[in-house]
Each structure stands twice: as structure tokens, then as C-alpha cells.
Image 1 (tube, chains in turn brown, blue):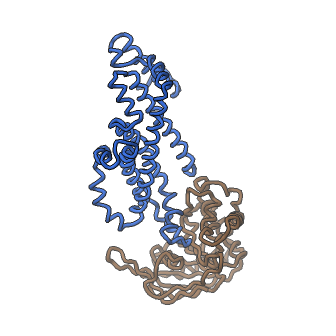
Image 2: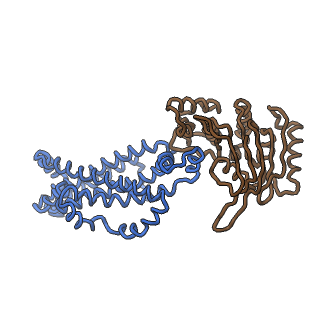
Image 3: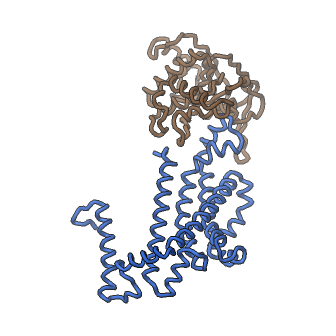
Length: 248
Length: 253
């Protein structure tokens, strides 16, 4: 369970205060696949950064469960893979494990298992520059999963990929979510993507950003991309934006 | 201009070298220049063998190399260490800014008087002169490389809980800055050779000193032998360094 209470985030840039999120309240039960959608600059990424400990709340708080031994409670997947180019693929996946008190053999076997999970087990000894964009993002996902987080934060993780890789990774992520039962916070600006993967969709809008709509998606997985259900949901989500200037 | 004949690069380079030596040989032989002022290459092997047999060549080379390696090592270590500190800490950067500006323009050789006063005309003095020159090159290369590390990668370390400066350094900053640091080290390989010869010309035993002795005896062939010795040793170090660098940076596309 993640509890966000009265959260505000203010950036101070050259003495100018810029409120990105204001008085946000949101409870996310464990195991939920929550998509956060909204226009650029509304504070979606900032919310993830606060939860990941990369940004500080100006007011209010965001409470995440503490980590269990040998695990990290929250892991973040960035929009760009951000692999460390001087490490081989396997070593990149094992990166976060080096902070946890684990013997090297355990780290390596856990990293290999995660690489297998994302379908790249055979590429363990490659260098990042030898991978395609989609493969790099899979490695980044494996790196986040390797620390066995209860909460997986994903910041527009597939937005830089081509359509085929993107759809493949969306389905794979759903499969991993179903297999592991993790809580996933998935930031995207793509409504159709949110409708395809998430069990709940929260929409942010306005300046500073607030929650403008909160919908549960009941449809079971696997979902069809081009069925009447998908079209209907996307239409309703679009309607939620109302007059907001937000095109996809 | 394009040559009418297409030659493979290696062949062209070899030909160029051949022409160079042929010209060099021809000039003293045809009495265009006095062989005393410009010894022909054909006279060099004999001079080299004589010097080698006497044991002086090896002694000189070993001494010069020991100055070179120790001076280079000290300069690189200090340059990398301080470059990292000043690169990681804004306070250190601000505090050192004017000291650096004051000391940096002083040429390494301007330290010779103090090298002699502090250490004497000996190996320590030579090492000091060499290390000063190397230090600045490596210091600036390291400082710049550390400051230029992609903040996004630093953030990855932070997101995985590596928040202490030490972890940030070893997990991200040092490996990411290594290519830039190595550029500085390679530049200093050549710079350090110059400092070796300079300090030995001031009297520290080694190839530089032996060269000065030879020149005062007008053994110009021996001077050339030592010039070529330096070229060969530098070439050896540079190729060794390039091989090591290629391995260290094998992750680069």
C-alpha cells in the first residue's frame, strides 16, 4: 500500500517558485497496476521521483512500505534505459543488488534469472551499445526487478520505442505483473497504452497538477487492442479530459 | 593532391621512411654537410653496439626509465586524486580556483631551481620535475571528465540507493570519467618524456645526461643513437598504453 497525503512539490529555480503538484491525495493498494496519465509538465514524473527518493516533497508526505531484507522497496525504470555503458548486460542487471548484502554468486544468479524473465538471458555478456532500444529497455526493467521491489515505478518506459517493441513490452509487463503481483505505477502520456495495461487509471491535469479523474479498469487480461471494449474505454478516458488541451 | 598510383597506406609509409633515410645518408656522403655535424645513419649501428657493449646504454636507459615511471606514476596519482576531489566538491572547486590559476601557468621547468634546492641533482629532483608537469595535465583532464559525467547516470545510482559520495565515485563517476582521464594520461606520456630529458640535461644521470656528454665530445653519432633510443622508448610506452586503454575502454562502441 502506498499512501500519498496532501503531497505538494515545489521547485525553486533561480528564486522562482514553481508548484508542480498541489495537495495530492491518493491511496494505491498493494498489487495494483496503476497508470498515471496526463499532459507534459503536470507532475507525473515528479510524483514518481518523490516515491523513488529522488525529489523531496514540499508539503505532505508519500509513504511507501519499508524494504525487506535483501530487497529494495521501490525501484524505478526511467524513460531512457540509462544502462551503465561500461558494464556488461548481466552486470547492469546486478547493479542494484550490489548495495544489498548478498554474496556475489547470489547476485549473479538473481540477475540471470531476471534477464531470463525479460527474454534476454542469451545476451548476458553483451555490452549495452550492442543492444537495440527495446532490448536496452528490457534490461532496465530486469535491473529494476532484480532488487525484488514491492513497488515498480515506471516513467514513460516505452515511449521512446517503436510501435512493435512497445506493444510487445506492454504485454510482457502485464505478464510479469500477473506473475509477481507487484504494485506498478506506470506513467504514460498515451491513453491507449494505459487502457491496455492498467487495472486503474488516474488522470492528472491543471497547473499545478491535481487528480482530475480516477477510473478502475475491470476488463480482464489479456485485452484486445482493437476490440469494442478498448475503444469504449479510450473514448471515456478522452472525455475525462474534457476541455483540457491534451492531444495524443 | 592525389598520387597517380594507388598505394596501400603501409607501403606508402614505409616508402616515406626509406626516402627519409636515403636523403639523410646521401647528405653527409656527398659532402653536402660535414659528417661531423650530421652523422650518416649507416654509422649509427657501430656507435650503438659500442655503447651497448660498454654497458652505458643500458644503465642510462634504466635510470631514465625509472625517473619516467616514478614521475609519471606520482603525477598521475596526484592528478587523478585531486582532480576527482575538485570535480566532486563545489567547495573544493571554489577554494582551489585561484590557487590553480596562480600555479598552473608556471612551466614545469621553472621548478628546476627548487627541485635542486629541495632534492638536489638526483633521481628525486628529476621525479619532482616530471611529476609537476604530469600533474597539471592529468588534474585538468580528470576534473573536466568528472564534471562532465552524465547526471542521469548519477541519478541511476541514487535511485538504487547508492547515495554516499564514495559509492557514487566508484559506481558511476570514476568509470564514466575514465575515457577523459586516459586522454590526459596519454598526453602526459609525451610531456613526461620531455621532462625526463630536460631534468637529465641539468645533470641527473640518464639518457639526457649521456647525450650531453656525447655532444661535448662531439660524438654526434652517439647523440643520434640516444635521440632514436628516446623515440623508440616513447613509442613502446605509447603503444603499450594504447593497448591497455583499448582493453579498459572495450565497452565503447
